[in-house]
Length: 113
Length: 114
Image (cartoon, rainbow over all chains, first blue to last red):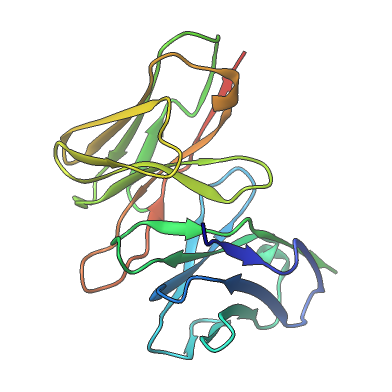
């Protein structure tokens, strides 16, 4: 079936730089997307979400961009900090099944000093 | 962890034995979910519940059953554990209708089946 995927499995970023994590989705019926952060040994933590009627949404130091034309989702982290080191997952809700999220495989972000 | 606890946090068992994992929430959410997480995979949905005694299958439900007799508790049972069920299991609770579909996750249970 269609699934959510990621372009880069590992992303190394220097502290203070901006990070961009990408996600491709293939289901045009998806109407809701979420980014999660997972630190080692912990459960995923909600970062930010966006609905399909939006192109951009900003949070604290994070921005999610949605390009429905090419079915692409990205998470931008400003001024990356050591505490941002984690695995980041995108997830999509298919629209026909409330609450049933489909997750990507994840991207490991490593912040170097 | 948004008022979600999981027990046990770690368990080692043998093939063929029954195992029950418990998820407890204090948020009074209607929707609850069980996922498994394996290396190289994201989270995969096992079962979910949309109310007391109302449950449905996810994409990897074979070999698992669930029960929800109270709003706050969602149990995941492996009737006869197999080595392929060695994984980290996460419980999640759903967002409020109209607010968003974000799910909040518990701390996880690491299960090893020998």
